[in-house]
Image 1 (cartoon, helix red, strand yellow):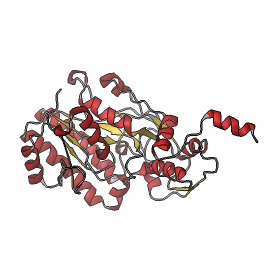
Image 2 (spheres, one colour):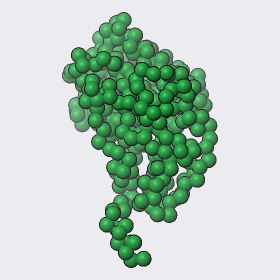
Image 3 (cartoon, one colour):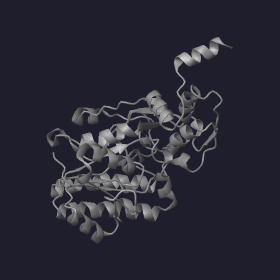
Image 4 (tube, helix red, strand yellow):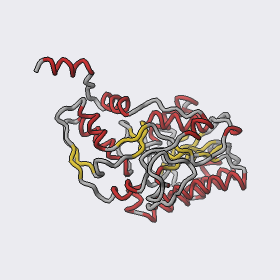
Length: 325
């Protein structure tokens, strides 16, 4: 599948701000049109676009002859609980506008990332398959589950090539946390690199699926380029790289920062985390489009530390320190 003009909505968000340069490197700057409700003067390709405004979406799709959309505009889990009305309008009305405009403009593909937020407290805790009990308890999760069904509907009813995957918690050094329940991971690593301790908003044993951003970006493009004849699923692929608790991340960081300490003070986000599974079955993604993550917890942590300006303590340096005591 060839992509001539790619619109990225939510380009100023955590995923979008990294997906835009990634796609630009693969396809060239002239093929990628970044957009967000907020302006960005540092990129002359950037257009201001409110996805809840259907006329504005139609205008952008037609003006730039968009044939592919990576629709990332969304209100995340924790932010969505603070403003559920906004989460509904952006996550559902915005997606509806994108689908309708894509049909009108005969676009080739709409990528609509979902989330582990679609799961709920009745979902099994471990190795959760795609087809399972999904009763989300947040507005974010409800909208993402509806988005999966909406994508399947537009494909079955109108032939729109809608595809998506369920992102776990995403870890990145390039962008600050954006209002998600798994943001503790980014915050904890950042504070450790700064030489500060950290107060975690989740319990120490809250196990959740996670993924490093380079694997997330690669997965989006890999699914986008997958042979349609191989796909038995469309909008709800489970993907993850590893599952961890905050305590396990703390232990990994203490390998490099011996004096680093974390205290645990759960807030309203604990209820959200408790409704999500601890691990996912990713076999469908492996079988249907060759999903393969490259970063485990150790590789993620070390790469984060280096890119945030910290130093990696090698096994050799730990050995020398112990020998000199």
